[in-house]
Length: 132
Image (tube, rainbow, N blue to C red):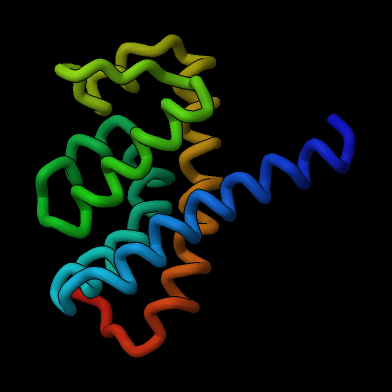
């Protein structure tokens, strides 16, 4: 891959992450912002420690902030055509059904996206305390 295509991929992730984080920062109540910020910062560690499948199962429907992150991950992976999400399919089920190679690729892509999410959460939600 050449440098321009890598830069384009990173810019796509950055733009997607910025849009989603900015939407939460501008249009959400303080409690949701706290939960979202906390989740965004903890997710990469949870994924590296427990794996993507277990982490998605853990955050699915846990609270509004984590649900927003869960849905955002699913939207990004579907947009990148790494998974197909139908109306009745659950992200966690789709991810854990993938082959080992696909699962690793999806995990890597999710972590790369979350790196941008974490950066934008720090910048756009400076005054928001993290939820414990």
